[in-house]
Image 1 (cartoon, rainbow, N blue to C red):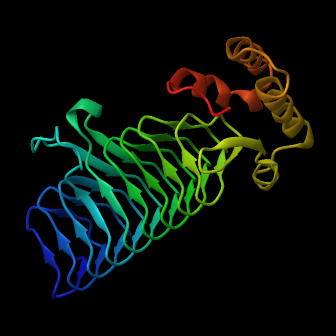
Image 2: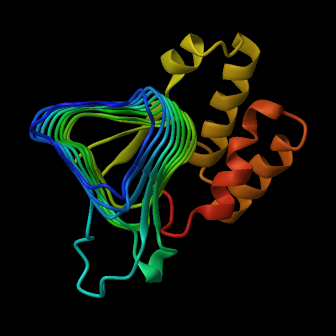
Image 3: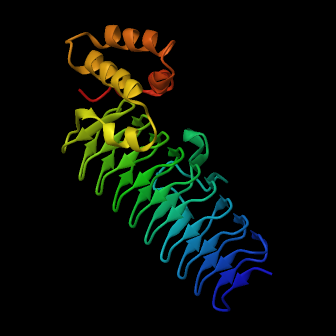
Length: 258
């Protein structure tokens, strides 16, 4: 049997793995599924069609699977899907998706999400990301693998932040952020590449040099965007480390930060 505190309210229709731990005064709705090894703290509310994978740790006072803050929502059975090995700290709020946005808000694996983070409807979060305290995403945002959001970063709806990118404290992201780029400012501007993060992830000196060259093509040579994009995509065909640009340029739709 799952370790469920006697004060918790767990709907009998919820699907809870036998080794899940659920803390005091937590409320679990009827359409919730929670995988093996996951720990749910006290005073957590998990509602809606929410699926949580294995070995996650969810701290107290989180709200997961509440209806989206979208006036178009009409009680459709949309979803929140959370993968495996995620840490979700206090007071986080993750909303369900909307029909208009594909119906799913999705979080991948091995993400470190700090206190007071808000993920709005239809966001797509990759793997191995870090969201510092009070980072917030509007609807339909895509955050790719290994991204780091500084504390109090705010991301406008429909933005895409590419792999290995990083935002500084209190950044306001209103356009797409290319892979590897450091973004900073109330209206974010590019501030070099996340070279320290790449070193920590095992990128070689040669690979980091290739990323720096791509950054120069995009931002330092005065090229029109389409010409710079074409050069980077051509390089990415033979330089595997630049392949995140291929995926990013296929998704980006708000124009990149300049």
